[in-house]
Every structure is written in structure tokens, then in C-alpha cells.
Length: 375
Image (cartoon, rainbow, N blue to C red):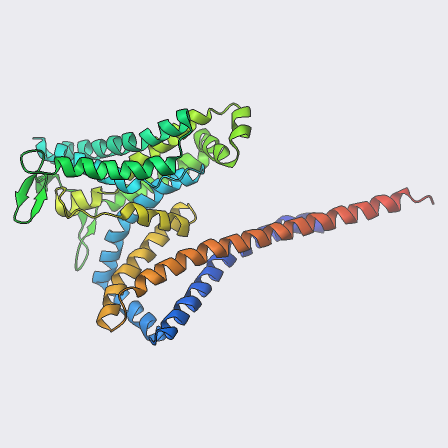
């Protein structure tokens, strides 16, 4: 009786150990490798970590990090939706830029109050992002074309499409050296939280809502189960009645819709238009953050904050005489360490389970042999 009661507790304890072992191993490995790299180049790693901790803990840095992590998090969720069913949506960068551009065009052309204009802008962004990703999903489902190839090509097509329309006399206007779409009135900007010294963007509410929906839909609904089942084994999912083609297209549409929101913090809380200075590359950053956060909504949030922290404090390291590339080195080492650490812990956990099952089978076999011995 005692053994039966203690076994679930022991299993829960082992799960907790495995869950904590991977991030701890990743952190220790990343710190060790980063310190070694700095030491080899003649820099003091302990001084660098001290500068980063001091500058990153300042109130203005904290606000900057939070605001910067909002689009990073949305990009990571968009990528993670595809990852959960073994789809590599590498086109988030093109999807959010196309979505932000046309949302900015529509937002600047409408003559509506802000309470109506904002939902319309968000809807246009999600629809455009979904359509752009849906093209790759349709080709994957009907023609078997790799989504990696199609989404990469769509990135270039999207950039060319924006460049064509982002010209004077078409859908843009010139303001000194910057060409941008018609400005969205400040009355249609998203709200802000009045924090000191700078406000936190209200679009953080959108990021939180997306994270909650991601957790619920993929973890608590039939569609989420079907999506994960297709990712594990398409033939098995098909045999159980799941439409693989429909699931692939739907997943890419959802991924693109979330990607369409990536540019909204910049558009509705910062610039008010889409110009040739609109941020690029956030989609590729989202891939790293999704890997770093292990496709978990909370894990990706922490990874996005860490990424913002590294970017913020990296500027201060330059003033302290450190090479500007050191932040990129840190980011790469952290992602690599996390991926390797989780794989090592996963394999170690599997070996422990196999060994435990083998011991139980051996014990049962000995019990059966003893029972068969005649008295």
C-alpha cells in the first residue's frame, strides 16, 4: 500500500526535477561559454554581467524592455503555432510587414472615431497576415510544397509588394527623408499605461490575450489535440479521422493571423504609420524566442523579456568598451544551450523510464518464476 501511494509522488518529483534541470543546465552552460568567450577576447565577463544587471534594473530600461518584448512575444507565438505541428513558418517576417502596411493604409484612409478605427486596423492586420501565411498552407496541403520554401519566397514577394506601393503618388507620402503611409490620428492610437518615466504600451494586453488563447486553443480544445496529433504522426492522425490538409491550412492561417499583430505595437503605440524605417527582422527573432521558450506561452514571455534585456543592456556594454557583437554572441549561445540542454535532459529522462520499466519487468518475472516453483 505504501509503495502504491509513494509511486505517484515519486513520479511527480522526478517530473519536477526534469523540468528544472533543463533550464538550470542551459543557464549554467550559457554563462560558462559566454564567460569563456569574453575571457579569450581579453574582456572581463564578471564586469560585463555587473554592468548589464545594473543598467537593466533601471526603471527606464524596464519599460523599454517590456515594450520591446511585446512584438517579440507575438512573433514567437506565431512561430510556435506552426512548431506544434512540425510546420516551420519562417515567413512571419513577411507576414507581419505586409499586414502592418495594409493596416496602416486602411487606418490612415478611414474617417472613423478611434474606438471603431482601432478594431478595424487590428482586423485588417490579422486578415492580411492570415492570407499571406494561408498561401503557404494551401500549397503545403494540396501540392506538398515545403512551407519553408514558400514562406521564404513570400517574404521577398511581400517586401517587393510593399516597396512598389510605398511610393509617392501611390499609397505613401514623403516627410523629409522618410516615405510613409498617411498618418493615423493620435486619437486612434492604442492606450498606454502611465508608468514612470515612460509609459508601457497598451498593446501588451493584446499579447497577453494572444498568449492565453494560444494556451487554451492548443492545450484544451479538440482542434489543439488534432493539431498536435498531426505534428506527431500524419498517418496516425489521418487514420483517427483528422483531416491533415484542413489542419495544415488552419494552422497556417492562425499563425499568419497572429503574425499580423506583430507590427501593431509599433503602428498603434509609436509611429502611427508604415514607413521605410518600419522595424524588420522581428519574425526571425521570434523563431529564436519560440525555441528558447520551448513553445510554452510563459516560457516564450520570459524569453522575449530576456531578449529585450540583452538588447537594452548591450548598448551600455558598448559604452563600457565591449564589442557590440558580444550581445549577438550571447543570444546565440543562450538559444543553442537551451536546445542542447533540453535534448540532453529529455534523453536522460527517457533512459531513466526505460531502466525503471526494465527493473519492474525483471521483478515481475522473478515473482512469476517463484510462484511457479512447486511447494
